[in-house]
Image 1 (cartoon, helix red, strand yellow):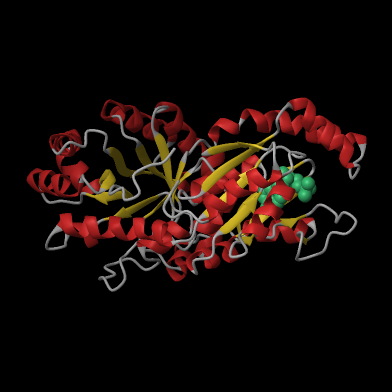
Image 2 (cartoon, rainbow, N blue to C red; image 1 turned 30 degrees about the horizontal axis):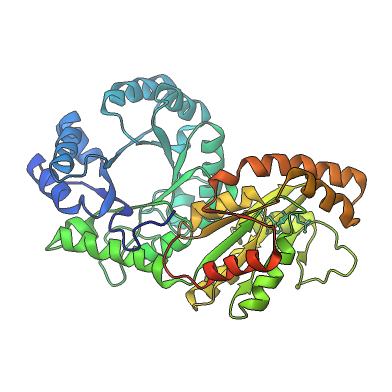
Length: 429
Ligand code: 5GP
């Protein structure tokens, strides 16, 4: 369960845009201890082909990091048959990611995905060097945020399993595509560094906080006087984002298990913590207050929030939409206030993707019979609603092994104390 509180390798793909193989070798050797992935792009691949890849892999292996990921950034954009042929041609290199331009269209993306089923096809939405004016001149309907979301949705529905986008679009795309889609952001620059030709940018920490999974970083590392030190510093900065933030504890579990009671008791015992107020399209139950129990909104308002990236996660549950507003969670954590979310399982999975340092806690019933009895005894739902909730509960119980901790709710006070312990703990779970 617990992991090294100061891990050094960060989710960074270093762009090895080097002039020769010797430089690829030395950069890889320098950065491999601090980054998860190396990226071979057009410059190296057009010159050295597969040798560029094997050189980087060997250098990583010799440095003791044989597991380094390979991002083959060829940005393919051609007719489907040609792209499928190119994808098959690079299959022996076993890339973890291969890029194609989303603008090549669904058939082209599908062709790449079916040619390489072991590789995540990463669809490039709008290049980070392009601004809204250029986008308009090229004839793509903007602004770039809308274009990027539209292209991301199209790519994912055509088989892409990763999306390349600017850090400024990450939050909106994270909200628009399934949580298992990897979001890759170039255009990250440490504060105060040279922008080069990038225009739509953010700092590495901000990109990560917005929901990016993998940051592409080139010149800030490779043009540094000491690439190893530069990589180490950015990796430490990213880990700092996680370790400086107050804990985020996510409680899930089947309806009727007693989540609300346990959470209320935990908050009584930990008054410094804050419980996020969710947005929902479910009508209020008697006694529920807007802004206290939930923010009650209609379908249109919910959809607008989800589309614009305002929600950290959202899910449909028993016929209604539920979601967690993103900003209040992030600003409280940054201000050292521990945050508690009480959400269902699909939402918990999404939070894991965008906030990898969160702690997922599954509250389990002592037995299935007890859960069914509690749900029926609650008397707030119709028979049909209880039946639907029990159906969902079966699936939720099966997901308990995806959580960091399973707390069997035998005694409310004991379960609450466990949550309080997590809220006051420092460092990732
Ligand atoms: P209820 O309608 O009983 O208040 O909640 C139904 C389910 O939705 C519960 O499992 C509750 O934890 C979950 N839920 C409440 N708010 C959110 C949210 O913001 N996101 C997600 N994914 N689930 C939520």
